[in-house]
Amino acid sequence: MSRKKMTDTRQLRSINRAAILDLIRAEEPISRSQISARLGLSLPTVLRIVEELIEDDLVHAAGRQGNGLGRPGELLQFNGGAHWIASVDLGCPEMNGAVADLCGTVHLECQRPLQPGQGEANLENLFLLIQDLLDGLPESAPGRLRGIALGVPGANNTHDGVVIQSTYLGWEQLPICEQLFRKFHIPVYLESDIHIFTLGEHVFGAARDVNNFVCLTLGSKILAGLMIDGQLYPGHTFQAGLLGSTFPTPQALLEPPAPEGWLDRIASGPNLLRAARERTRDMDPASLPPLVDMLSVYQAADRGFPWARELIDPAMDAVAQMIANLTLILDPQVIVITGKAAGAGDFIRREVLTRLEGRLPSLPEIRISTLGTRSFVSGAAALVYRGAFAGD
Image (cartoon, rainbow, N blue to C red; front, side, top):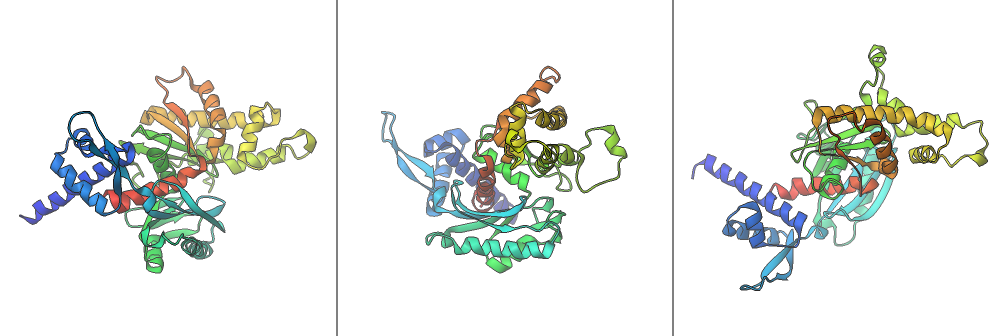
């Protein structure tokens, strides 16, 4: 067999393996004959690949299903609970680390401080956080730890494992995957934080049944993860989805550039909370709800506090405009509100629909994350699963 044919055969086998494993994971329990029928693969091909997956401990038997005709077929189940991942979310006020299995179940969590713009300090704290996670692994886990998933805000070359630029972390052209692999000898998978949220919603959450959707987070920054035909779309320079830097008015184009985007100034969580505390500084504390985070401001607006509505109304105007533009450009099937904003998701959806219904040719369905803040860990599990197993 020629080298080209051997390469083509390996690629086809990898594609079939990924398709079979994905189908088992998504529709377990399922039989070999059902896999063959669903994917249009020959039964011998399915039998051969399934045996490999069983040997790799990725799939196991889950009983038998009979149809009254002949021998009952053995059912198969994804064995994600037998494999572990470590994840680190670097897009928060602090570094959030977790150990989970490939089903997205969290078994351990810990934090380390983040120092905005302090690259060396943040790198050292990342090393310490990962060591904390490794030290806290259950006894059965170390030999089954399949990878470390990093969610880094900013522009990342995910193919080469390089942080191109993350102003928040103070990193530029940092070969983070190589550095971590040299230190811990564990495969490292790099993605932007919003893309990991998006993977989590696609594999485990509110977008499991769609391949074309937008994942929207209204946190410390306003970001969108774009899933097109089941694949993440990072953009030509790995910066797609920086919605907080969009220009909501023509006047914004005339202003000098600033580190903080225009939409972030109006509608990001920290700015809403800061403005709410400033607006209520001279009010009677007994008449105010506790203002502890961005959700507090949304909840106050939902309860009809005038000062909260004065802040939330222009924020929702800008968010609705942004969703309208996304809809007209991408025509997604679904928009998922994820991250901390999911806690106010019903309110946000209602405000957006009030502004947009009847104004566009069609509106995508707006769904609220079923995972909430856990969508990051779920996405990290999906990232390692895809890199370590599905494409083998």
